[in-house]
Length: 122
Image (cartoon, rainbow, N blue to C red):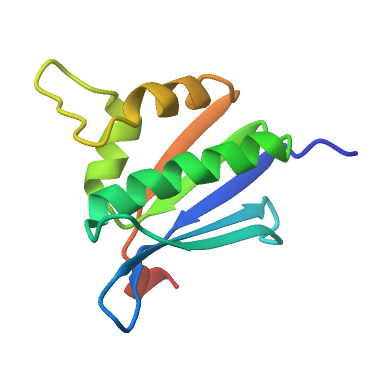
């Protein structure tokens, strides 16, 4: 199998009709071809929780697919800071994902994040 060099992970939280949140993750190759789409119900209706879960799921899938470099696209500025800056002394991870995400990120050659506004970019 040809190794993928670059992949994009799109994180997009949505609400179902019954007001329950869902986690939606798209993993695409460098040319935009969809490699994997994951959509599942979230345990909590908190956007930060959904986006952090989506990040964890997306990174796991990208690693399974053999991706070396990842660009994460999200509309969550907190998630952008979480990835770029790690955590400082005042950081509180109420969901407990940070150690696992930090471990996953270290397994890639490069991980970047871009915070975008979905309405203007997609």
